[in-house]
Image (tube, rainbow, N blue to C red; front, side):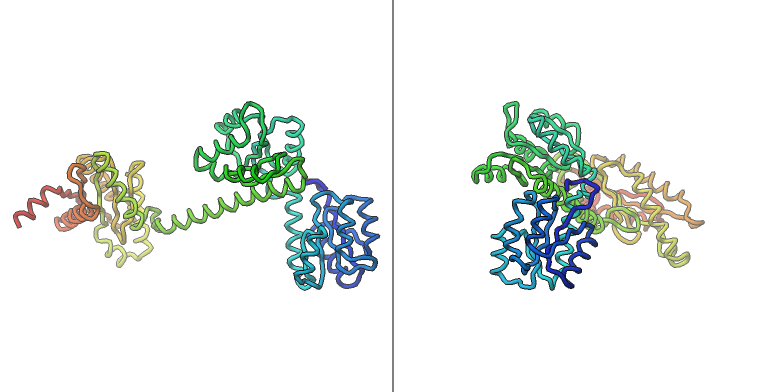
Length: 444
């Protein structure tokens, strides 16, 4: 049965009878395959001569021959790549090795038929290619006959296929579209081989590094295989193609890519959770310290100013005590929204802890920083927090690349400026210049 067909694939079950025969039939049908039953080797061979079989389940002990002898006799009558599975009560190593030599694909013990059911379900999924619909593949092949054959195989799985005949055309398409996989012949027109395309993809951009590449080749010598893998090929398939093997390799590569992307997304989400304040959606203290040091290093390297704002909600404990933590949370979110709206692309804004926030602004001088702080203060003063009057105090400190200092020093000055704003009556912006602090320290 070809991939993508609506007809159920046919499973040949060869078992003398009894409970095991009934169980195998039920399992095959539960998995979604159509069962063809035989009680002997000769009956199985007659069935295989008369119709196409997609998979075979063979018992070891048959009336006229062993399952291994039947497997050898069946191979000329089934398509290349059709799995033949031995189902036996004997699972010793010697039998398994002998079964593989006889052409058996895999061995399943009757005591563990759950493993067989999982295999059948996976086999059916690979035949129908259900989970590949919507994938986009670039096929690089200069034989039009071969292009039509491969495209037909892939499109019956619901895969979208673009085809070109040369590496130059492939580069052009990569500039226009994104692909989930590349299938390329090794020998191409235009003076560049499939290896040239592989090297181009692996050397141009992080996204191409993850792109699965399958090479089709008539050359099957070990040296060439080694060179393919060294260049960054994920897999190769020999010509002429066997449809079942080809689609299985495509399926494996596309599935591996999706699993890799899923793991990457999970890691991204875990990092986001670890560096994001869940209440306000801003960065948290951990993210601030991780990135702020880089901001200062860049400011010093590039000779650019940088300013820091440390803001604190006035009398926040009273809000929680008098109106409850639910309203307190709404206040925190509202202030966070004001800071987010006031930040530019490239600014670092975070909830530092409790009711304290921090805003780091690269390429921002003292005058602009004070103006930004004053606007944030006014915007917060105008917030409607369920009848609660809300104000914030802000401390400002700026980094001078000509006289660099540590992150702790810069934050300490902004935090002292915040303390001054609180001490002088709250709801105000205070800036602390480094030279003033140094002068005070000298006098002390």
